[in-house]
Amino acid sequence: MRIVDIIERKQNGEELTDREIRFVVEGFTSGEIPDYQMSAWMMAVYFKGMTEREAAHLTLAMVESGDRIDLSAIEGVKVDKHSTGGVGDTTTIVLAPLVASAGVPVAKMSGRGLGHTGGTLDKFEAIEGFQIEQTPERFIELVNQNKVAVVGQTGNLVPADKKMYALRDVTSTVQSIPLIASSIMSKKIASGADAIVLDVKVGDGAFMKTVEQAEALAHAMVKIGQEVGVTTLAVLSDMNHPLGHAVGNALEVKEAIDTLRGEGPSDLTELSLVLGAQMLLAAGRVDDFEAGKALLQEKIDSGEALDKLRTFIESQGGDASVVDHPERLPQAKYQIEVTAPTSGYLSRWKAHDVGVACSLLGAGRIEYTDSIDYSVGVMIHKKVGDPVAEGEAVATIYANREDVSEVIEQLQASFEISDSAEPLTLIKEVIH
Image 1 (cartoon, rainbow, N blue to C red):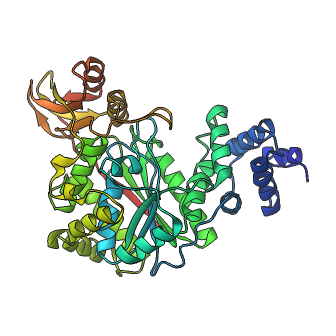
Image 2 (spheres, rainbow, N blue to C red):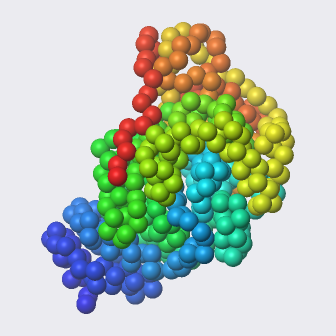
């Protein structure tokens, strides 16, 4: 078998066999297939696409390139949730204890933020003492004990994806739907989940800019799940506007606490309930979606979800007192308001640009090795559709330096005010 023949077959739009796909992935991971030939193969996939069967075989070949986490020792159906990345996306901090409080085990492996999107691990590490590094044995013990644990991904999880993604980034093949879908699903499947709920973001602050793109990606991932025997469903949610009000690590932790107390922003609360209800459905905990939402709301109203958050934080070495005293989270020195230049209705927030503004403050990183400031960020006071008066605060910058002129300019260019505006539709579609 020769890689050049496989490249030619894909260039001609032919369906590759399982053996051919495995040969490509194994050869590239081991170094036997050089970058220039793998680039040609991925470019052929970019233009010719892949069938559902091919995408499933590609995903499994990537999974088998490294470690596969065995969570069979955890009691119950393990449901994982994955977001394709957004701005102010605090749902994991809400969902992990919320779904666990309903009796469904949440054994989650998360990543760090890069660029304009925030990372779940960075947000948890804003809590003093919180340990995201746990041995596999301790990770399983925590989930069996508390129904919830969140850790970082292991070093050898899907090494094929790491190499392929680095090459896609410099060959303009990142946008290939089969390659995106297999990248995401290989990591989720290798993480040991029995079922996967995907939050596919769509809009300015998301990777997929249009509903059509997001639908294509969601369908591809759901089909891969079906092909490999993992229950998978996807929720398309809006990212033309930052989710909730807080953007920044400690600010988002406080907002998650507020949400579990029943006092959070309506959009973050709604998305958490929708995703959480789908997780309960996938685990067989409830028989229908509305019953799932009702059960989760009951856990919030009773205080059980907030109690679970305290236990969760404490069990991973964190200072659980922040749940009742969020002022103990990292605090920025300065608060600078960004005001409206005119009266009207907030008609647009460019979520991507808000994320960039937070990165300028030090809340995010450009390279994975960059350090971040947990205390800084932006609080959004006006949502799309809200009325606003001239001179009224639209957002507040939380900074550790007085001169934030470039951040103010970035935010002022991020929003628009019009004579009228309609609120955005948060949930676009649910794909089973």
